[in-house]
Length: 603
Image 1 (cartoon, rainbow, N blue to C red):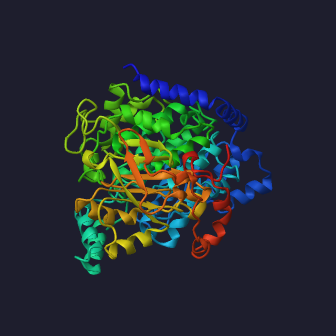
Image 2 (cartoon, rainbow, N blue to C red):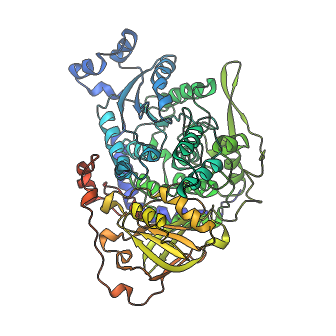
Image 3 (cartoon, helix red, strand yellow):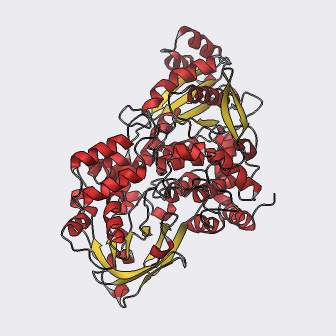
């Protein structure tokens, strides 16, 4: 199948734009390639330190210096459902690699926080920065330089992007990502959302809200809606860092354990001392990132990845911009309806055909690069297949080749929408992005007076006081990375949905984030320059008229004279201390803009 011309053009543009930085990166990776077991360069004392706690059999293999040694970087904690299953993985991994004559050691742990827990709380202001902390932590873990390959155990919002950044920094090593899988289905997401809206209007008690939330988030595994965590898993499959079909197998099952063992063995098989050396720098090239962006659009994935993919790519010398996302979105059909873009959860999506069906159908229609390098050892075509247990052995078989539920999953030729729904916005207010896959066409264009806020709590107060009447564009500014770490404003979703349900034209404009669950209200997010950088969003006043039109890709100021005003300032002193925020002052001072990845790492 011939590549779609837009896919080819965007890829060529990225390659040209990244030529210098990518060349420098690949030269560094070539120089770092090991020419023997990585630990062999250590002194005898250094090796003794590295092997001291190993059991006798592993210690002998390590000292012999001919067995491959696998580093495990883990985001395990038992407070977060998505990461709790990872506590069993190191033992599974060690046993698996011993079977092929290798060894494995936990190189180190990285922090894993949950935006759902910290939503609307001070801890959320550390969330985005935790991605770069994770990358730094993983680098420390691998800096002992005793590993021939690595496996990365992580699932949720900032964890996978942070681990990918670290894997890119150690791009001379093979890397396999081992997911934990989604929790089994609980209370349907649309029912939970109704209870949230009732609570916001005072029509449900806190006890009723708590009961609904716990019936939805009820066991080990990722949340089952299609937010950032599950978008991460999709990306790892589209980009070739998961084994085929690994993303959405539920935790603590025989199939999940078999995939974990196989992934560990595959990582060691790819080391430089074997015949199939496949470092991560060879997998994560420009084509892989284009495939990831196509997957993001085709599935209606999280807007957070508009930041994370840029940061992930830059760690490998590849320069993406939001126009790449928008251009690919325009030609990528929306093939899936998973909550908040529909009523199904990821388990229903997986049962309907899931990622294997999507990848195959996109390949057949020229919307993916088929010849990328993957950990499977072949091109992307292998990712049409599904894993199964057959007589206790892990095998891959062809998937159904069709959707088993066209209310959840459709082919390229009969999609839910003809475009993926991620739109770059531009205009006098700056640049931003909007996800419209869940926004009904009649709600997408909004022209209305603005109400200005500097915190989401202030929005909630105004709503409770009955102040948000008539058509309104809610502007929440001083929420960018330099101001307060760019927290998600997802807790505003119920309020804005209620206003829209009352028949008001309503939208959100912010230099903050809105997450993968932004839902049915149009939200122009990630506005750059942010207010803290003196962006035009800081010059707006109550009553100014804005027009949002994602169909045209514009974000216009209709009131004259706005750009001649002095920029407003905000008292951010309350955001500088408490809950560890004082420790992140260097991050706020040095972070880049959202459109360049909101990262502390330079090119």
